[in-house]
Image (cartoon, rainbow, N blue to C red):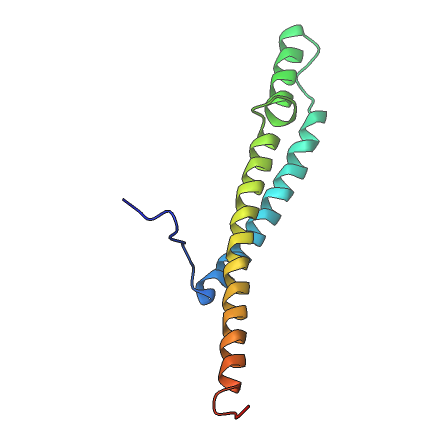
Length: 112
């Protein structure tokens, strides 16, 4: 059994490149969302009912339906942004701990 109080920590030297990679991935996802939103103006399927139905189907898969590409990308953005925030927290915690160590070492040997 694992202890529920155990915390998973990432070395700040590892967390920083991971946070940067997460930022880059979110930026790529946002570009894909922007591209997918242009698909709602999709055309070229002709004027037959079957062509128009196919056009609508493709548009919904990209933008309009609950399981659309845009919704999937937004979900991925949320997850990756949460990961980035966690890695940034690891970096911030390490910096704070380092500062506390420096502050405590400055007081060593001083007479009050």
